[in-house]
Length: 494
Image (cartoon, rainbow, N blue to C red; front, top):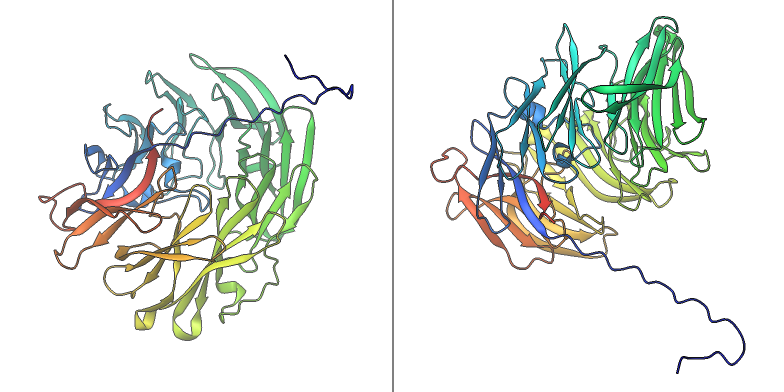
């Protein structure tokens, strides 16, 4: 018989326990070959089925990223496609499994690169590319499944950063335009069909120019950086426009010379907006990292302009590089690079902080002395997907090849495990040692002193089960052309 509550009280409804998310399976590893001319490859996590995706890569373009972007910027959100550039500045769309002939998107002339040159729609079904030349600019939209293409002329300017962005559904795009009657910029929302259609004016900014704008992950808000004036009287405003209701939030308003917010970027939950506040270009005297809470309207200074540098550097010689938000949107990571004029050296420190500026923690610190080719300390070169662990390299020296000992540590620094030695590293973000999607392994390039070869390896995050996927020579691709620097580790197709 069914259970009866004899007290007469109505039993509480059963609590639904949400299903445990299935951890992602580890898929192919993206590589940039170490030989010249450089090429782009993907390989299975056991080293089998190597596929060449593209060749004659433009290394400068492939590694040009906003400071908050990792190698995953080049890969679509559904992890099926990638954008790459060749030595002529031509951008191509390709599948990461190499199953299609790369599709030419357009060309970026030297010096015309802009933030937002290309982007994928949130579902990964479309790619947007700015074909920029000194004479004209065209917005190119390509359907990644059908290869159907739309070419749309747009207005661009040399002192502007962003011209277009996808809305949240991928079926709409937001374009910036200039209007004569208002003598300023405006934003319009277009529907993507056979062409761009049904434009709807979102906002107008009389006598102001849009320097940069970004759309929140949920598509409900747009952060806009506006600039007007010149010389000593540059006026800058940062606004958040709510698309779901007629509401605009003022984030910041300043007047003065060379003011800038660099690379505004959103938290994954779309509730926080972060940006640098400082000089127009790095190095940034007194740079600060600000976070705006769209719910409370509060703005938090994470560093503070008066922060002292214990390593002997000055504010004028300090460069702040934001890394991004944690997956739960509660933390930010950033790196500070400093110049030490007294010994022709520098310093690098990696920090995490809560988005309200509390719990600031220095995870790693290193000193570099270029005149002696010496380096001490350690660099953060990777993060696990959930940010619970960091990959560290303790460098051997600055001479010849950048090699060091690799460790994994908890984000709070309570424990550390040695992984391998003679590991190639880069101490400049974005990180070149990707952790697998399930967080269990790390991919890296290593020098084997016994054989004289470089090896692409993976190892368990606990230091166990080290595997060599492929071995070769940096100068001779006849042994293996696949040996290269790991850029990203993709999840397996669902």
